[in-house]
Picture 1 (cartoon, rainbow, N blue to C red):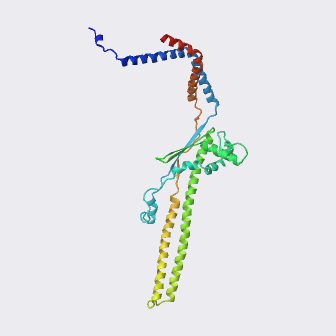
Picture 2 (cartoon, rainbow, N blue to C red; picture 1 turned 90 degrees about the horizontal axis):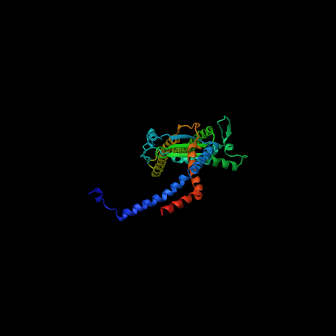
Length: 338
């Protein structure tokens, strides 16, 4: 007895699956046969599409991207400046720890109109050695508010800004058809960012320092007046122990002098802290990788465009050849299968 006699017979489910597989194979065979019959047309269409897009890649003007990487320098701890003054942070109600970072605001500052306009009024060199005003390079026409708006929008579109929130590493990529101008604009934008941030921080800290300084001058004047009044009172009343009224008046003037002294001491501490903060809180941006004129274009990329043209030409050739010549073989194949 052979081993084939003991093989189980396929169940109903197996018969259905075999029938479905055979049906799918029969359905794909006519399609493959029709495509193979039109292989010359498909090949011609794919080659034509690849040639057209590859030629377009040679015709389109190249675009270069210059990138600059900026990192904010570590800020000193809040306790460092206070310890130099002999003041405890807990005494002033401050939390220990490092200073805050402004890196999250840098992308918005780079896209701000104020910074972009500061770049538009400058001239930048080109690859051929000539220098051109950036506003006139980005927007043609006579000088007008409309041209300035077009130039601002065009420059903003050329900016690609990324920020690593974990390391606060800021990358600014500037794209343009001229590699030298792209690198110059990227470096100038980082310098403008540093100047703008420093000016804003110095203005805020300086305003606080000037306010405390003015208040301290007023408190010292009031203290001097209170001390002069106490001195005049004691000179006019050398024997106050026998008069309750004079003792009460002397106590009131002493309290006034002590209050003014405490105000002067507190404002003196605030003034010294404001002077330290005026220089400590200014962020410093370190340029890790300055922008250099790129040697290679970023677009158009010829190889990807050739591959895309090949696939597009193949699809178009199949769509054009199938309705006219591919339908008949498919009908004949279906009739044979039936």
